[in-house]
Image 1 (cartoon, rainbow, N blue to C red):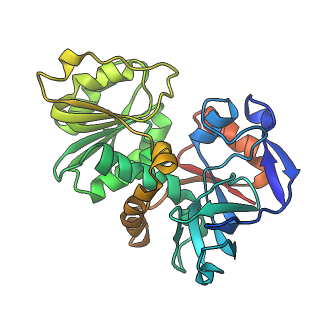
Image 2: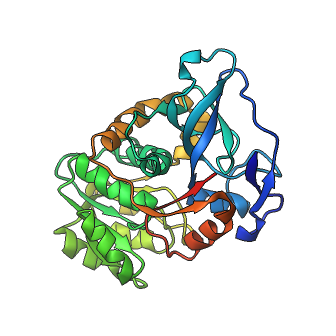
Image 3: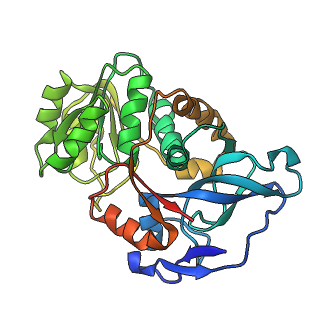
Length: 322
């Protein structure tokens, strides 16, 4: 089968098209013939040596969409031929992948392949951020960093679907503002520091919930506009440095800073994935959420996909077609 193999830690140049043996499902697994492989920021981190992988060499890719064409021992044969989205066990940048029970989910006929392919990690992460790491209540004001990216564009829509009164999206350039606006959020361009006051004006007040995957000095600015009893969820560090929080910024106002990793949930609490994915996928099926697609590339263009994400040019999700 065709696949992308990483044999050395480094940058996008380490993504090498190759031929590997066809995968076979083990006990409790299915084999998926991938129709779409999702490209995530975590894949860039994995290639750079900053995200857990099974070992070297490895095939990148956390999630995919495709058709089950083989089942292992203990898996009902009725899954054969079904279209599913999945969190894969052995890398999605390949013609086939395996996935374990509880980590693949049927997609009904009629769902667009690009929409399905873009959805697993984005839906699961956003549902966890908004309902597990924090609890969004109807009427809340929500601030979303990196709002034009895959997580950002999904979180904007999901927050609205869960009852947020106002969503403000922080973007890195004016060119990204229109896509945030089209999704119903109010864009704020963060050109250096000073976005907090603009975000508060755009949102009409302090925020009950802030989603921050950037870290660094943005965390201090977030705390300037986090409402009493509000929650700041930290789920990444794209700035390359951590944010700093003092305890005296929290207890007098009843505010919370929470950390969240959907990857950690999948690895250590896989039984908690389905209760999040089922309601999140329902939002995709009924049209409350639509994945924003940046581009769809061939499998051999994986390096190009990673470079586009690294350049911060992408808007929404990039997919690979094996």
